[in-house]
Image 1 (tube, rainbow, N blue to C red):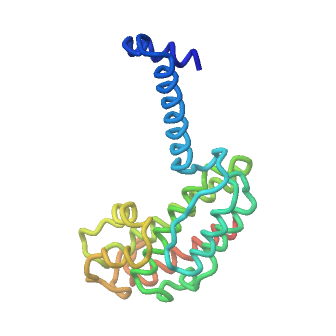
Image 2 (spheres, rainbow, N blue to C red; image 1 turned 180 degrees about the vertical axis):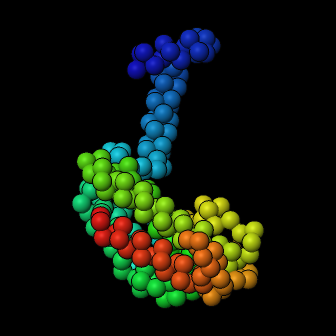
Length: 218
């Protein structure tokens, strides 16, 4: 405590001329304030993969199967690779849209791909002892982003799926949908893919087939 008083005295020479009880009062006040600030910073610190913190708080999406996985992930340590992978497999397998794009509305499917890409990307650094799983997660994230990109023109030629996902992907489904522009395209609209024209639906289903293979490799 005397060291604190001496340090304060150097910064505020007038304090040195105050009575001892005043000096002690200011020292205790400074000590308690510093402790409070440190405690608040630790509480508000955002968890990152590979850190010593035990969990990350994924906010609710109000999509039941996604929220079930997120609640499980919230309880895991960042180095629990086996359980992280198990939950990511569940995230990417437990909905019919991963078998056929028309099992969801375009807006709901886009939200699912966007949110899942964020979750998968978050856990890439956690795969410290599984380099093949780490690379597979990178590939899966890229495929999820690709799905969003190939859906983008449904909402007009100027719609940027990556930018929209970055801005709204951390929100719940309703907020995400409500901020989408009006839909101008559809799933049967022909698009160029792999050197030929095919309906958007068939193109997305082909990409989903690639995604299923990647998930099976986790």
